[in-house]
Image (tube, rainbow, N blue to C red):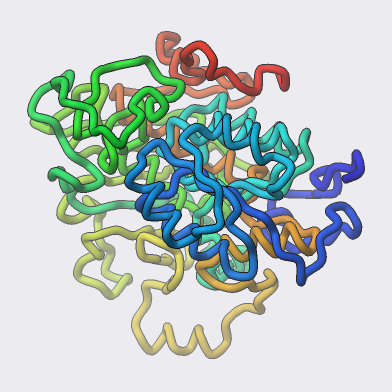
Length: 455
C-alpha cells in the first residue's frame, strides 16, 4: 500500500455512499483474487456473514469466546484456525489474513475492529457500528489513517429501493420534507429472544456455562456476575452491551431519509417514555417515542424525525390524500413532503408514494432517471469484497456509517434517560445535561483501550 488515502479523493458523502470511486493500484488485489478472511464472533448472525464472505474467498481463522459456537463454525470451515481471544488470533495469524469480519455484541465491535485496522486489515462490522460516539469518531479516523476498506453491514444501503428514495427526493418528487416518522412494533421480551427481561435488576448471578469465557465476553465493560439473560443472545436490551431496538434498527429504517435528506447530526433530541413502560435506565423501555430535531442544511428545511417503538401501531395522523387506512404495524418509515409522501418498510427495499393506485402507476411509467449506480441488492458483503479487490469504496464505509450510527446513538441516550438532550456535534458534547457526556466516551477496563493515539 502507498501512503495515499482513498478518502482524500472523496468530494462528498454522496459519492462515497454510491460506492463507485475508482482509485487504481492501491491494494494489489485482482478481481479474481481470493482474500484470506478471519471472523471474530461466529454465532447467530455471524453464520450468515461467514457464508456470504466465504464465496470465492478463504476463511482462515475463526474466533469466539464460546466453544459451542466455535466448534460448530469449525465444522463448516475445518481448515480455519480457531481462537478464543481475538488479540491472540491477530498476534498469531496477522501475516496470513487480509480482512476481518466482526460479528460480536455491540460493546466489543470497537476494540476488535481497531485492533484489526491497526494491522492494516480491511474490516466488515455488523451494525450498529460501535457502542458510543467517541468510538464511532475514532473508527472513522482510523479507517482513513490505516488506509483500509471498511463496511458496516446494513444491507438496506445496497438496495435499489434506497437509491430510488434519494433519486425521487433529489428530483423534487416529494418537495420540501420537514417531517419524517420511523417505527418498530411491539417489543417482545422472552427467554432466548433478542430481548430478554430478567425478573429483577440488577440481574441475579447464574452459573457461567463451561463453554463460555465470561471475562472475554465482557471485554471493555465493567465486570459483573454472569446472568443467562446477557449471553449468548439477548444482550441487546442491556445498554451496557447493546443499544436496544433503536440502536439496532435505526441503521436500517432511518438510513434512507438520513442519506436522501443529508440530515447530519441533530441539535436536539427528546425521549418520551409512556407511563407504565418499564425503564430501569440500564435496560431498554417497553415503549418510547424519540423526537429528533435537525437544523436547516443549505436550502433544505429543518426536519423533525420521530422514532416510535413498542406500539401496536405508530401514533401518526393518517392524512386522507395518502389513500390508506392504517400503516404497517411491524415497522416502516414515511417522509412527508410538501408535494408527496413516501413510505417504505422497516428496510428501504420497496419505496412507494402514498397516492391513489392510478396515480402511482402513472408515476412509475414516467419516474425520474436513475442516477445512482446499482449494485447487488442486500449483499454488503460482496460490495465490501469487491471494494477491496477493485479499489472502490463501499456505500456504508465508516465515512458514512459512523455518522448514521452517531445519529442513532444520540437518540438512544434520550431514550435511555428521557427528557431533552441538546447536542453539539462539532464539540461532541451534550450541552444541557453534562452528566450524560460520560456516555459519549465510556470508560473501559484495563487492557481494553484502543485508538487514543488518533486524538
